[in-house]
Image (tube, rainbow, N blue to C red; front, side, top):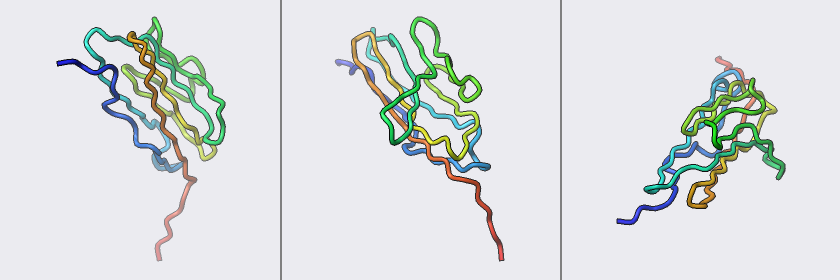
Length: 126
């Protein structure tokens, strides 16, 4: 049996919707994947960009070192193999999060998820 190269087996719901004041802290985005026999990860880059822009800001990387946050340390945590935790989202912090992988076979799989942050709301009971 021939095994396939890198494959995503789990990705976050896209879009992921959070509500400020309800579930906007410690939002975990989880990606899972499988590798073919003998395949390994050469690098992982985690970046963010505004939904209406092509510009990206890299904030976490994995190369020869484990996956780690390199910018915005007060906004994100990361954990292997590939979990990104958004620590405290505010109403104006709507981003698309990008995962770019380079495998030892030369494959370059990627994934993205948009985060939509809805403002605080009030429940009015009559």
